[in-house]
Amino acid sequence: MHISGTGKGTGTGTQIFKTRLFKVGNIIPEFSHGADSPAAAHDSWRLFRIMSEFVDGFETLSSIGPCISIFGSARLKQSSPYYQIGVDVSYKIAKKGFSVITGAGLSLMEAANRGAQKAGGRSCGLVIDLPFESEPNEFIDPKLKLRFRYFFVRKVMFVRYAQGFVFLPGGYGTLDEMFETLTLIQTKKIQPVPIYLIGTTFWKGLFSWVKDTMLAQKCIDKSDLDLFVLTDDLDEVASGLERSYHDRLKLKEPEI
Image (spheres, rainbow, N blue to C red):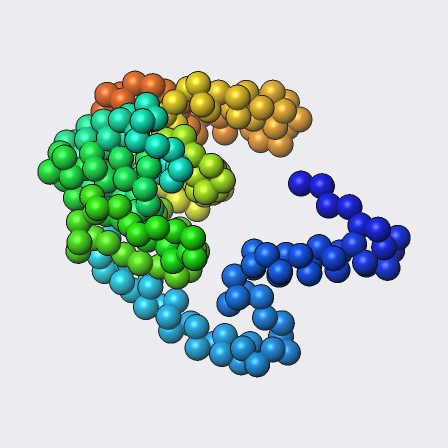
């Protein structure tokens, strides 16, 4: 995004941008206060709410068994072919014995929760409080519907117990989760687990750029391209997740 100023060193352009940013409400109020704001005195008390969200998430998700986090658009209509793909891949994953975690929204997140329930599996939704978000979709198990105020806590929950990740087509939020997950595996902050990107037509342009630009300019290593799989084969996604999970279990088994 290009932002041009007219202040010629006076900071006028930046000030105009900041004024507009606050005016349109793009800054969440809890993070918009300066150090001299009265609200800043209450920041330390937010720690207790943050802790409570972590506790609720850990206590719930640690009890649902092996799970897969599925991401995707909240905007595509049910008429999109990706909606049925979301239902189908989640169904196949749940049939392998995995619980399914989504962002609890509509569209492709709903499709994933729907597929999990259709298969008789556990269907979990991590709801984020946003002023423009609709209510969570109806295909989430009531006891597995968790609500978060803080994005960073919710992000931890997507990753902490996941035995793999599936990314359906989506927007900035989906890309955010995808690149953060890739970074965590690349930097060895979490164990390597499968990452499947479903919809080769949708994803191929982005990853052509990753290969032709990022790799070509040595911003990533060639081995980083092996951290994910682009595919349209839903059976391979479900089987690959199952195979990887059981392989890791074998590695943890004590030698006799």
